[in-house]
Length: 504
Ligand code: NAD
Image (cartoon, rainbow, N blue to C red):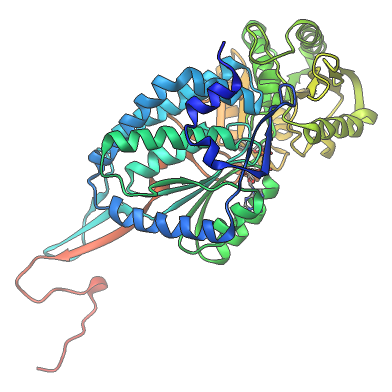
């Protein structure tokens, strides 16, 4: 098997040049050091932004379908590097290899999607009220797009933004999570290869900015970056949104979730239980779309909790471990702070819990410098504000309800609005749910996590309101222009019938 050092050098040929003492990158798998990097200084970030502006001015002149060709090459490079990149995703953020592969596949999928979009950047022709006038709505390239990403989807989020931004004629600046900078550098190297094969790509069309929150904040405050696409906690989004708004920039926010699944009395539990498990313990509960609350009809409440309890105990006994190993379903938490956050949440809910399974740290002998946990399922009599905050760890709260209206009330009571799901065979409950869920995603007989790139992805309320990837999300990366043209030979009429006759 390839060593970590060889993998890193294959994926990041210029790694030695980027090394330094500022940012020590460790693997959550065992706490080992993967690399140590130099971060960008304030003046280097300034220069990268200036270069991004230059690159934008050149790139916007290239026709959209031709820009799509660069993204097609990028997608093919990602196909070639899929296995290596997936392995580095797993090494750096700890998700199981199968999910690492899924994440890279998502990058490939969005590239394919963006290539198609590159020929469909269409506007409108609108009926004018005036004779001999045409009115159009045009979509034009926007400028440098600043991308801030979280540790848990360390590469897919970049590709959702970059593939679309590039075909839309924009340049990109990426400030990845300080916990996962190596996969970002690997993506940059893959982009550089694609740019080389394409030929004539302006320097700095896509760049990585390495650093912590301060580096992100510098980009956020810079008026040369018209769009900030920020993925991460609601805490971060609250700061970024205000700072971008203060300079009249635009922000696209993909923030935290507190996702729930409703299980009605008619649900097929053969469908529901595996969906809860993938949604709750997959990625060790570290997805923005992870299932955090399961709202169950009272008639099957005990049955569902007991089935989940059995499944969690069995996963705890056999399926937690090294995410690179086949058969592991639950890898480590990202770090100690994340483990402490989980313990804090379990302490807070203790007085309200009827029964709690799991939650403890495991595998301490095999991995003393890493944080593996037994996923936890907590039985509650009702929902209180104690569980209104997102805990980014595998804790699932199970709550009863009596009527579908009450289920939706419980569901919508939290401040976040990302993903939601109902398990039911009753069409009436399914349709009621779709109309009343206040989330950006509302699934029927499908769990809360595991979205396809074809749909617009994002959520409401404290999740931030942004939409990325499929559908018409490309519009976020362009500016809209309304253009009216007069083509008559007589004097043009004014709108609203206004007369403004000059003296003869
Ligand atoms: P985080 O908020 O700690 O960090 C995310 C990114 O923001 C990092 O790159 C960080 O350096 C940067 N950052 C932090 N403060 C900043 C500031 N003031 N200005 C500019 N940049 C700043 O989040 P995390 O722990 O890496 O990720 C987990 C969180 O991300 C969870 O809340 C999860 O739900 C959310 N998330 C949301 C989505 C989504 O699509 N809605 C996807 C993935 C993760």
